[in-house]
Image (cartoon, rainbow, N blue to C red; front, side, top):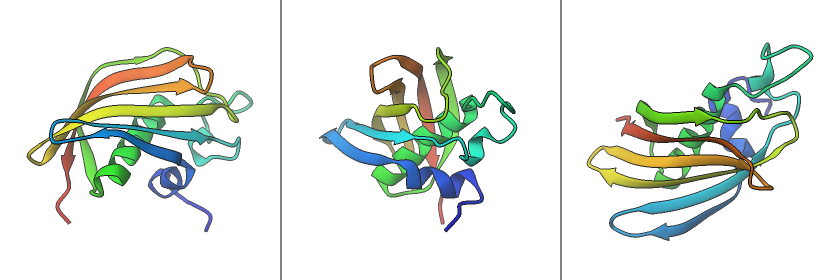
Length: 132
């Protein structure tokens, strides 16, 4: 299948997903991914100098949370989000987050970094469950 949207493409990219802690209060997770130059998220951003858009980084965190919590989520808000470095095609990334479930919301913090520990982005999130 050739993914036509980010929602189709992102789950296929997550690898080596690990839950490092899970109890009644918090879940800690990490996963790896890499984007080829043909990845849909690079289209138009920017021709000749592809950089992964910040919105795709945020969608990647949400996608990982959906996989772990086995539910559809929608961002309610982000706070203290910082984008510190650019992501180029072929870079190996590590996505991690800590989150707590509060009713129909998941509240947590995330970090995306390169495989050699260079911080790409960080922030806090609140996701709401989507009733299907």
